[in-house]
Amino acid sequence: GENVEQHPSTLSVQEGDSAVIKCTYSDSASNYFPWYKQELGKGPQLIIDIRSNVGEKKDQRIAVTLNKTAKHFSLHITETQPEDSAVYFCAANAGGTSYGKLTFGQGTILTVHP
Amino acid sequence: DAGVIQSPRHEVTEMGQEVTLRCKPISGHDYLFWYRQTMMRGLELLIYFNNNVPIDDSGMPEDRFSAKMPNASFSTLKIQPSEPRDSAVYFCASSLSGREQPQHFGDGTRLSIL
Image (tube, rainbow over the protein chains, first blue to last red):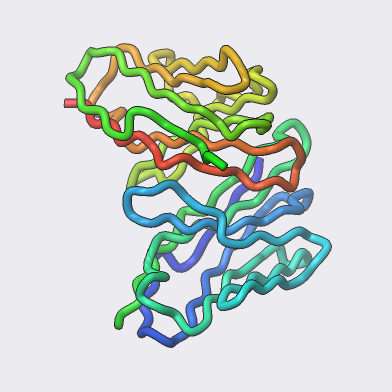
């Protein structure tokens, strides 16, 4: 089955700096890669996603890049703010009989210091 | 639109008691997922349904866990008998059909077994 590895597990930055979180996946049939943000006491919330027919997608301060050949994708947050502090998860979909299923990375705890 | 609704938000009970967690998916969504989140194991998929039918329950830890989806707008996850190691946050998520669809999460049930 699909395996998703996420790095780093913790990331500390100063307000205004950029933050980058990286994920690798194993299933070459994966073609959908969402990113989730989880705040304390809440469920994971979708912040951006990318499909394999594009290499990059941007939404204001957030961008995601995808390299299908290398099987890795990354989340980039620019001009970080204290409210960006949260746990971030990457995920990848599965093919075959696991239709509809997402496999999640282990999460990155992002702390933005004022 | 209402998101995924879970109840209760918090549950504290004694070891050996039956626990029932409830989920109302987003209207029109065909897929429903149950996850468990702990510090040690991260976000684990327990079971998921498509059109009310269980598709994959390989993540259910043992026979003490069972899940049902009697109709398109309601699902339950039951633990009987409960044990302290079942303490975790349990999330329900739903999605539309299709391999490239995001899952939408509820805010979870924080379960503590004493």
